[in-house]
Length: 364
Image 1 (cartoon, rainbow, N blue to C red):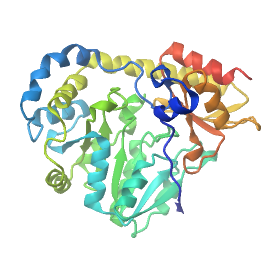
Image 2 (image 1 turned 90 degrees about the vertical axis):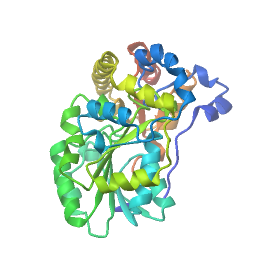
Image 3 (image 1 turned 180 degrees about the vertical axis):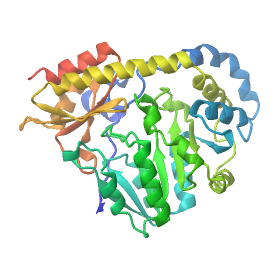
């Protein structure tokens, strides 16, 4: 295991606005990994009709919302915990488990390490190897697990590599973690975008493993980061009780609770999103795979990691080139185990993807 010391967040739109003099409203963000279709049409059409809901407190237990989520993911509603975004649930879970030593598979999202550090814990990174296409070597990984590890955090599909772990491999990992007394938190923020979602989601495993909690939200797939609606799935009733006891009541406002029920039932929107992302993922992967100056890693999420092979070109160069055309990609040099030869961008609508590709490839 390797300890990673420095973690930085990516550039935000406000800072870009200051540096480049471009209004943030004019920037197309290929860095945020948000559904390009925007919010659910059903939500847009009907939420305003529910405005009177703010005159009363929401149900403290959010039973109706939890039942809707349970139907959506295929589990018992008593296995669902809702929160003010998945970030709140990550924080609550780590506060309860209070891990002294946690393992994160890297490169990955920085918020995990931050929350562990706030609780006084230490984060160790197990590196995904570039020569393996950033795919996890399950056997090697399991051999590195020890009794002194309290918590394992997996992002599946992983950000920024867009690689995933199958349910079969996840079972092996969970079995090993059970033997070592390790709790496992799986962040499935991007799983709904995957073509093979049924093969990689760990939700069914919550019926068999009580050392497992899964996190999801509405920020990315449902294009609603401002809604701050997240949820967790776990079969561990003791953990559910502890989280519900610890978290503040009414962390989700009345409109957000109603919005969730509308979004999770908008089957047409859900299918349209999956179809669009599947098509554009395949098209963009094939386009960049054909370029001699780039190496791409096959994605399963709604974004793709790309390595720059041209010696004199860096991730900052491409970031600068694209932002001047009012398109923001992710410079991945601040991720652990990546350097200034890696970029990441998400898949948008076809015409937007074409514009980005033309900008990146214009010098080649």
